[in-house]
Length: 249
Image 1: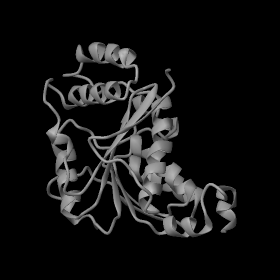
Image 2: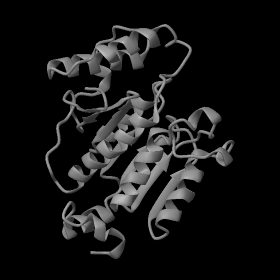
Image 3: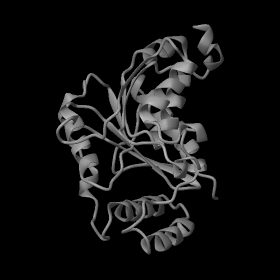
């Protein structure tokens, strides 16, 4: 095994390490995607494409993979520099633009899995999912729940998030209801998250959901594990099934 990954041994077999090296992953969004990209790279995924047009702001620093000196810079270019500092031999392709209906089709779709960490302030994340489905690419949707991480995987040609019951005015609150229902079906305590949703509901029309670094760190491991399973042909559970990891009992 490559010396860079020698400490991955036992957990990851040598042939699996080779399988994931060139396995192409597309990451839409450099907020949640910032630590996911680093976790994937450190595991051995060396072929990453990252898309985002956003600029680093002070409010990002409570959770995202940037520092104070990065404020004002393009997220995706800053992240590319960091990833190359970790592994200069990796292939890190970046598009420093917000995904739109005009440029989505210009992105090379030679990918095996996509991660949708886009902002749901518009319908672009749904357009992203639809396009991935056309290309037969599964899409991982991660959600930072502050003290917990939640994700679901959309299979090509299967149900998608537009099938969620639209009870509330914002997509985030509808996802929140889906998360509560999913966890309760599994017998998981949700009172703490329901209380959060009540408070967030008071500001949901004017503010994105609050997030913590804890949830993002948990998500980075969860998403990386799922992508590893997809890359090595191990079973995963698809939407409407889900994955959840919490620091709250």
